[in-house]
Image 1 (tube, rainbow, N blue to C red):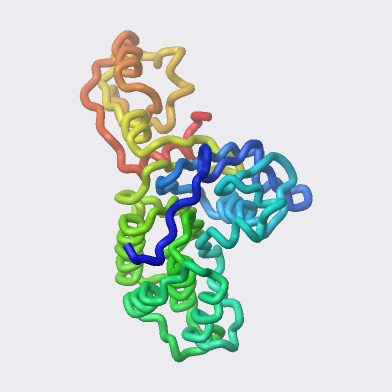
Image 2 (image 1 turned 90 degrees about the horizontal axis):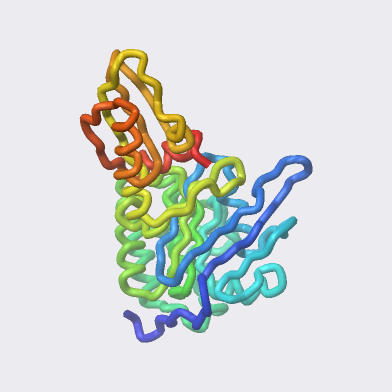
Length: 308
């Protein structure tokens, strides 16, 4: 770690915590009372379709928008009252790739931003700029969407903040650069004590980094699980069933997806495997196989399924 890298500030409890956090735009509800909790050192991935409320959540945590209800704490601070203090300790990549101070060259912009962060690591900023091929001599306002996103990542990481809020950080990047960004992010997490909240609709990219996953659907947090809990409790079940078979009456609440072919069913269920297996077998189903899903398959099943 660089000698200038900051340590995480002492926070008694979660690094990020919200209770009933709500936001409306006129008659439209963007967030409907979410309870988010992110522990120190975790990589928390917030997954949802476009318009689910992911970007709104991050903007509220930065106090770039005002909440309509509920509460939020970031690094022990209330963003609504201490927004500047929160932003000073956060590395933020916004949803839209647009650079501030478009008349500055990238090199000048990096120097300008560095002046506001005592912990700015100039050597690290140069390393990131080279690795991401940021055109330092170009004016920020002339960059492509992908180039701007790479510049934003350098700005977010170079002061080694205790919290990163990254909104679709690989949006607009080609596959080669996406891989490079994810590698640099993995190295950053290993080298600098930090907590990370990433919003995305492409969980497969972050499967190796994620510790905790939140599933956001239409402004509601419908699931919040560790990676291991998600893999353990959302599984695919294949079974052979007798003619005129009826599913157990106590099973439908856990059913996320179902399909059938003749007397064979294939269901994605959420719950503890021994309990669900027992219910199926007691109903007359003959279990053929249970299988683990990828994190993305499991989250998509939750987002599209009937489970609360």
